[in-house]
Each structure stands twice: as C-alpha cells, then as structure tokens.
Image (tube, rainbow, N blue to C red):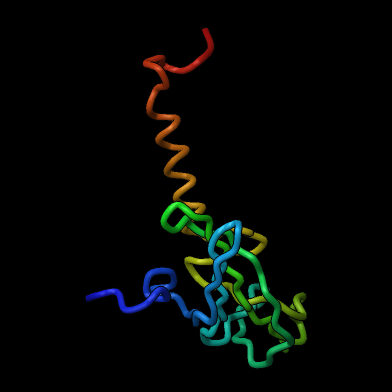
Length: 132
C-alpha cells in the first residue's frame, strides 16, 4: 500500500476531499471539503436530510517537514427537522479530525498530549521534579 498523493498523507481514512494546497509565509495552507454522509443530530440522534449552509473552519494541524500546517475545512450546517428536538441546526464533524469548538486537529491534540506526557515522565536535568 503506497502513498499516491498529499491527500493520502493528510486525510487517509477521512471523508474529506482535498481542494487546494498553498505555501504561505507562516507555513502550508490546505483547503479541504468534508464530504461524508449526512450526520445525526447531537440533540435527538435523527439523521439530517437538509443542508442549512456551509462555512470554513480553520484547524491547526501537525507540522509537515518542520513547517506549520493550517487546514481550512469547509463543513456543512444541517437542519434538524424533528419538532421536539431543542436543536434547530448543527454542524457536521469529521471523526478523528475535528471536534466541536476545537481549533486544532485531533492528530495535533494527541501529539501535544504525548509530548506533555513525556515532559512530565522524563525528569529535567536529572531532578525528580519540584524546585530547589
């Protein structure tokens, strides 16, 4: 199984279509569109059937070759048509890539967590932690 494109590297296994990659002074900017099946409403769990609108969210991603990565992900907002549901609209999430209110990818979140665990576990300068 080989890598055929940048999309294979960045979005392997995600319902995302890569639309554009540009180089900017701050790093790489990747534009993509979520294209999975209609999601379920988080309020009542019914399957969405109507698109309300779409918008672009910015997610910081894992660095690529020492350069920062920003993913501009276009996601859809859906109507919830169930009368008794407290939610009228909701936004699709791309599993394993985005979460509600998150401004970084889940991959970056996991990488940052792993770094923090290593920093806490590995003593600095041979000390066992604490101040001297």
